[in-house]
Length: 198
Ligand code: ITT
Image (cartoon, rainbow, N blue to C red):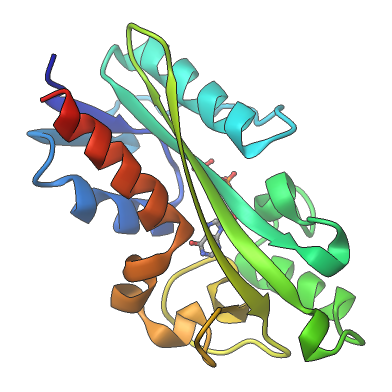
């Protein structure tokens, strides 16, 4: 079986910008919510990235009938026992902006020294179709900066310094982020799977 068309079920423009370029040579046509006349919002009621990724992919597949890929991702900070985790998008409250979430995280870590600011980004991608939904994982280790830096990317990128670097993802830019990010790593597994069934 070959998957010719894939629907990317995310409303996050930052994710779209990172996912679509990596799929262009793998599937013939990529769709997203801009191709639909009505948009679909899925309430993220799961307790894990995996549950939420599956929920988003399966709900959207039911509407579109096109193989659907969803991304659930977030930041886990050791000092905060894994928070913001699945609540990363709404850390500072429902509909909070990236800036508000980042400000809250910096405030919570303000007395925490560099050696204890360990964190990781995690991404779970779920691929839903007529058969069993499959999941793919990626993560990247790093630490939380003491202040916001850089303008590339989205979300917590201005605060996340990947291991082996001394600048944030937002300073390093999209090419370096694409080499090692949680999303790229999960997506490499997705594209590996798509090629294996082609
Ligand atoms: P969709 O559910 O529509 O895909 P969302 O933004 O609500 O969009 P999530 O529920 O998966 O997506 O929330 C993930 C949040 O984690 C996201 O809003 C960012 O704040 C953060 N995040 C995930 N990946 C990130 C990345 O690569 N860089 C920076 N922040 C990231």
